[in-house]
Image (cartoon, rainbow, N blue to C red; front, side, top):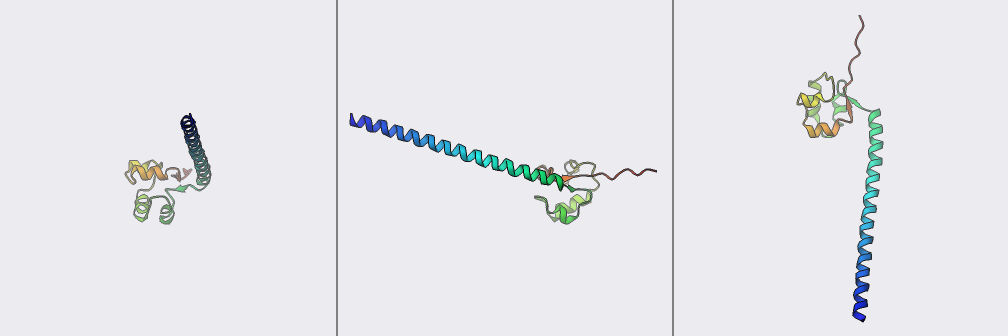
Length: 116
């Protein structure tokens, strides 16, 4: 009888430990997820205010973008003017993974049409 109680207590303790560990892991994931969402929201809000114009940015400004160094900055400048930022892909200036990393940070502004 004593061994049965010990076995029951052991199973109960392991169950409680498993539930507690799972709950703690879920809580950690939720906290991490909400922190990431909060950070990306603040980054996207500030990024919209400070988008880099592909048609006017300097080499130094372009080099501040993720995965864009001197060589890619030169290639972007050489490919100007751009009607849209997606031309970085269609003109094969950048590979898709690099473009996906910067597409929310850049814009391709157009010159205003001059009236005659």
